[in-house]
Length: 394
Ligand code: HGY
Ligand code: MN
Ligand code: MN
Image (tube, rainbow, N blue to C red):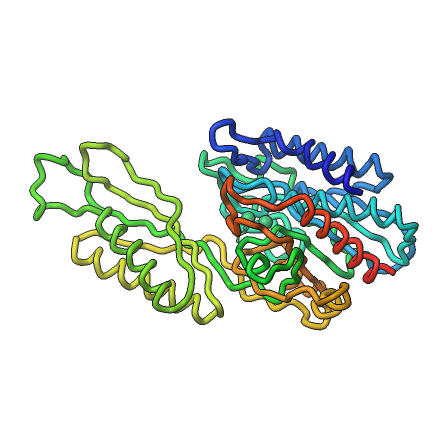
C-alpha cells in the first residue's frame, strides 16, 4: 500500500502547482483540473473499476461486488486559488489506496464500493460551493446551475453538457476522507478523527455603490465613496464574529474602475461567514449588513447584499460516527466538528447516511500552500478508510 499511495501522490504533485507560491490552481474545467480528472479515470480503469460519469462531470468508479446499495468514498480534485495539496486530492488518492489495501487483505465486498470525484467542490469558479454534489443530489437544479457564471462571465452551461444526474442512485452510504482544516487532531495527538458536524456557512456578495469622481479635485465633503462603507463593513464583520465566537472573512474584493486617482463607483466584497448554528449565521450576516447599510447611508452610497452560496448545519449520524470511531487499538478516534464545508455535508443533507474521516494536519493551515500532512499520517488515513469500508461493505 505505501508505495501505491506515494506513487499516486507523486503523480499529482506537479499538476497545477505554482512555481512561485508552491500552491495549487486547479479550478474546475481548466487544464490542471482536467488533467487530474483524466489521471483519476486511468487509475480507476487500471484497477478494473467501472467508471461512470454524469452530465456535470462528476465521476464514480465502481468495484462491482456483492449486491445492494453501494458504499461510496471519495472527495474532490479541484482547489481554491493558490490552495494546498491535500484539500480534496487526499480523499481521492486515499480511496484508491484503500481499495488496493482491501484487495491485498483478500477482502471481498458484500456490496459494491464506489470511488467518487465531485466537481467544483470549492465553488472557486462558479461561486456555489459543492456545485457537483449539489447537482448530483438534486440540492440545486440544472436550470439554476446552468446560469452560474465565472469571473469572465462564462456560464456553467457553456462548460458542461448539463442535465439531471443519476450518478448516486445506487449509493447507500458515503464516507469522505479529508485532511483536517484546523489543529484539533494535532492538539489531541491523534492521526485520525471522525466528523461530528459541519457548521452552517455561507457566501454573500456585498455590492457597495457610490459616485466615481476625481481623487484630487473632489472635496471630501462632496464625495459618495463606496470604499468607506466597505471598510466599515469588513471591520464590523471581524468585530461581530469575535464578539459572537463565530467566523467571518472578506477575502475577495473587486473595485470599479480600480483606478489609482479616482474615487471608485463600486466596491464588491464577498463575505464568507461560518457559525455554530443556523440562527447565529443569520444574526451575524444581518448585523454585518446593518453596519454596512448605516455607514452607506451616512456617505450617500448604497449597499445591496446577495447570498451566493448557503449551506445549512449538518449533523452526521452519531451512531455511524461512533461505530467508525470505535475499537481502533488503544483508543477510539476523536469525533470532532468542522467549520469547513464538504461534499459529505451535501450528501448527508440529502439523506445519505454519511461519515467523514479526518487526517491530522500538522500546520492546521488550509486553503494555503502551507497545508500539510505527513506520510505516516496519510498511511494511517488509508488504513482507517480501508477498515471503515470493510466495516460498511463487509
Ligand atoms: O470552503 C470550504 O469550507 C470548503 O473548503 N470547500
Ligand atoms: Mn476547501
Ligand atoms: Mn475540501
